[in-house]
Length: 485
Picture 1 (cartoon, helix red, strand yellow):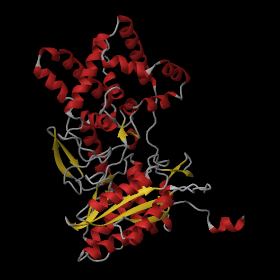
Picture 2 (cartoon, one colour):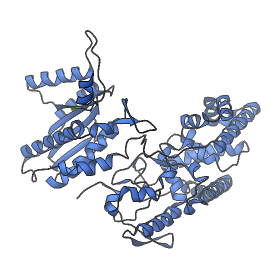
Picture 3 (cartoon, one colour):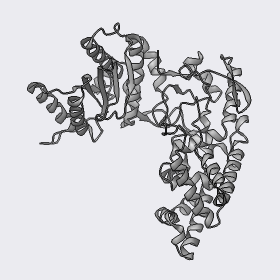
């Protein structure tokens, strides 16, 4: 059974049909690092979301009101904490996908830290509900995924209503779900069996601006007055005062209140832009169409009968991935684009883009070969991106790296050590995708040369070592352009 599929393919409709109705064609089964930004709800024209911003502010007003009274009651303290430590939203496939240890969007210990910061702010007389959105700037662990999940939780019924309407317009298959006592007809998730909720791409950003000073600064750049106001606020000073405001002088507290009020004013006035699907800043949106086109080239043998056949199958998978990148246009997915959709050949995407491409190709391959596939960031034996196998004692490890990663040499040495210690790994592959030409400097050994030498030396000495496979991901000039020079 496949572990990933695009929303459009699952619904058996064209991607353009989703886009024309404003729906983000997400990949089900793997999260996309995009987030709902509450600022984008301010002027939303989507009818289900025209009052969503008001709902969020009322929720935060209630949170602050309960928290302000919680000193009198343990029950109110628990209530305030539970308004933050909410269940993770289901069926959206956006965000980081990392679960907390108690299955909530915000861990309870983080919720307690948020409330502590809220207490500091309330103590100086700031009770504006929008300040809750800015607490991600001051509280460790209250990141973009947590903020986005909290926002979605507050207005989840709006997402359900939106999904039900769009599903009806598209004529896709739905099932009745009862959410908070209300019945909605929603599509069913192919892997979890629960509901799918659509996300308008007009509400998505790479980061909600309220969780990053850099994002606020970037948004303020477009307005000279706001930029000047932003520059006057010393954020480290704000954070220092936030840490223990009760011990500060009246002058320091007044200064803090003034600075935080200025920050709130900037936040209210900033205009933000939603995620541009054509530019695709994170590099995710173009992958699904490529994989669907490439799927006819992904061929697997029958299920491996033994360890030797498993290793050979995974090696064949890696070489199919290599052909996808080098020969079939997959290298175009590895680089950023301009606003006019032109490739920036010197600006590769983050490493997770190439890892995502491999995962989705491997998903198709492993389904055919009946091979177990799992993505593992760290399984206690060093960095391993993927584990593929037919059983606990029959696994093959695969790590995907870009050549511009400053730690590829260190990472290879770690992988050597991890592979040597592993008792159930039949083989390990270290795959490096070259994304930038490296100019040779006299007597300077590049990382790629270093790990190639280490790999060859280990093989000669009979040392158990991961197999090194190098993929050319550089976009070279076409033969016609070369001839014309």
